[in-house]
Length: 358
Image (tube, rainbow, N blue to C red; front, side, top):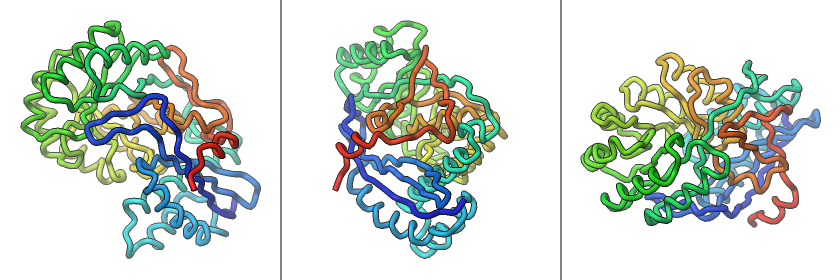
């Protein structure tokens, strides 16, 4: 297939539950929708989570530039990657450029799987198996009683695992964890995420305080790229440490693994380098037999975890559901990749029009 154009639409979708983290409170999801059009009439799709609308607006001219340069090239993830690395060599293939690279890579793989008439997971050599999933919608930095009530709501949506955010004053965090753990059934898994809020010393203190409180993992307690400190923390705590959403490509993950920086890893599809980067990361995780989960993008990540030898947990957020024709379905705490060609993304045109920015 030959690329005809890459088109982008920026939308901002209201979140059903606000996401209150130690870094910021998010009430809307700015998503950049990508459509890779081919001369053969097949469209490959992807979306990017921009965190801030301004980042989405900054990406739009980069998309237009890439579209003009990619027109006439083959729908080849390897060729597309070489184009980006050459085109942006002086600027640097990082930041927003690497974000766009990942999005176009995802769209290329989608188009190829659609052409083959296979779901992406099958195209990658896997089967459409159910993936254990945790509900990551909400459970921000609210009072303990409110957190407990919201936790019950998240479980009631059909999940056997949920995640809460930490980063309150020390005693309040402990109270919130205890309130949530007491409220939910014993068999429900509870993860916690600090979003890099702590120093190493405070993470050691708080982590030891939380040991034995029923947490499945503590996610990103300190700066994500201080692998030596993360390794010290992992050795010191009984509760497993999870990092990975900020791995800037497979090389960063390789460095983290070489230092044994965490007990688990959870790459982000957008930051790890799209489908191509994910599969490289999955091979790294398999080589050292470390469990690998996903961060955001559940629609595509479900396919990729199905093809990941050490697949662990799928993080579920429903932010893109409002603009999709067929949102993901959760059944008994599992999500199965949809049995239709490609990654399954198809935009709801009315919703896209409603939430479009600019």
